[in-house]
Every structure is written in C-alpha cells, then in structure tokens.
Image (cartoon, rainbow, N blue to C red):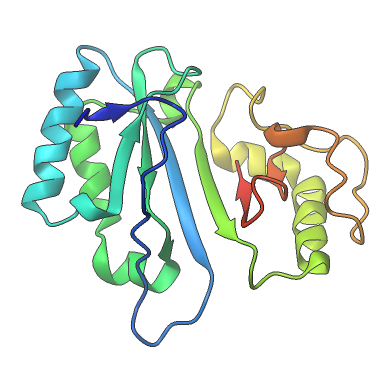
Length: 186
C-alpha cells in the first residue's frame, strides 16, 4: 500500500496497454523528477490527480538513489499509438510543473525508455547503437543532461553485428542488455 515503492519494486503484473488493432512494440517509460519540499506529499497530490483523470493504471512511483529529493515515475508497458490515444502527456507534464517537479533542469534526472526486443533484430539493435555513437553530440544536447555518469556513450565505433558488446554495461545510453525482454534508451 506504499505510494512510493523501493527501487527494486516490480508489480506482480504489468498493465500492458495497446490499441485493439496493434501487434507492435511496447514502451516502458521511466521519468525521474526532483522537487523542493515534501516529495511524499507532492506524490500523494499527483496520485490523486492521476486517479481523478483516469490515468492511475498507467504508472507507479519508485525511490531512486541517484536523485537528491525526487521520485521515479514508472509507466507500465504501452504502445506508441496507445500513448497518444489514452494518456495526455502535455496535461501530465503541465500538472507536474504546477507541483514544482523538474526533470532536466536539476541536471540529476533522466528519462529512460525500455523497448520490447521481440520485434527488433540483432542488426536493428546494432544500428541503434551506431546511431547513438555517431550522433552523441546532438543526443546529449537534446537530453539537456549535465551528468552523464548514468548515461554513457561508446568511445569507439560499435560493431553493428555484435550489439551486445557494451563496454559501459547497464549505463550505456543505448543499452541492448537491459533485460532479457527489453532494451533501454537512457
């Protein structure tokens, strides 16, 4: 019954959301946010807002040791089409902002997106790593992060045919070995 779960928490079951016609890739979004003031109280207010807007089934909250006064908002697996049809991110971000939550401004927070690997080939994963290697300057600027300790880019050109060779391990910006079923963009 805790509102903010431990970092290692995994729900007993995930709510997979997709549109009826879809047979596609699921995304699992993890958004780290920080705030000033009482995090527990602000998360309680956010949870009430999610309940009121019919969004509670889409996410839950976890502690994250990399944050100084924040929480990780973890979304259940959802397809890109379902995100646009069933969850209003603009309204959600506006409400987070009204509660004085911040993500990129603090420099400590990150956005992680898990992507199901079931529809991706080894070559597609390798191309993703190559894209992150070649475009890291632009991706870093776009991310607005100040700290890349938890989001490392390859220092040498990755082998497209061997995407699982990740010198930065789980902190790779394009992490193909996040789990057996997902890869992660950090």
